[in-house]
Amino acid sequence: MKRYYKIEIQNYSRAKKIIWAIKMFFIAISLSLFFGFISQTLLSSMGIIVASIGITIFIFFSVLFDMIGIATTSADIEIFKKWIKENKKGASTGYILCKHSEKVCSFCADVIGDICSTLCGAGGACIVVTLTQNLYNNHLIILISISVSALIAGITIFFKALMKEYALKNNNKIILKIGKILERFN
Image (cartoon, rainbow, N blue to C red; front, top):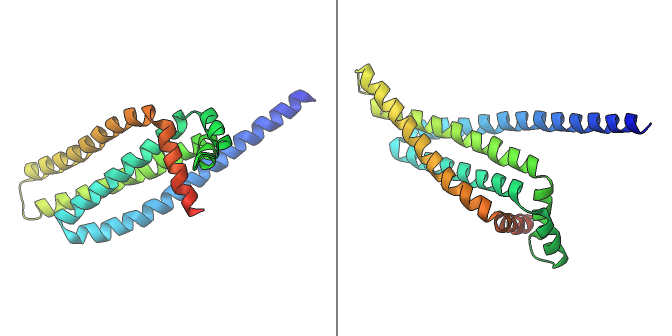
């Protein structure tokens, strides 16, 4: 009887994980469509400066949400239990984030991070189109396209590399701050 109960719980747990993944799939598509539409309509008509500002904002959010995902998965849930007993502001929300760290990390790092990366690519394409609209040399167009993509990737990777070490060293503080921010909205 016990073995059957364990198998039933495992199957229920697996089903919940699959449902979570399906939800994330549809959330990612919806957000990508929404932000993709906005970025394509705004960035393509605004030129290099606005596209560059948009790319900078998308990189910032990508790095920020990656930091939250990493901090959540590496935070010490026991410290949050202690902070809850001490009535520390943001501790209860931080505890909930840590308790659901796989979902928080998936949403922050995968959904938001990947959407921001895609939007950076859209912004980069807008810059390439603007820079190459009067060029007829295919080799130069390809070189500009590759250079813009490489620059965006390099900047993103640079800031994410800096952020990862910071997130791992300050994970509990970061999640406590996020908890305080989220508690203001509740």
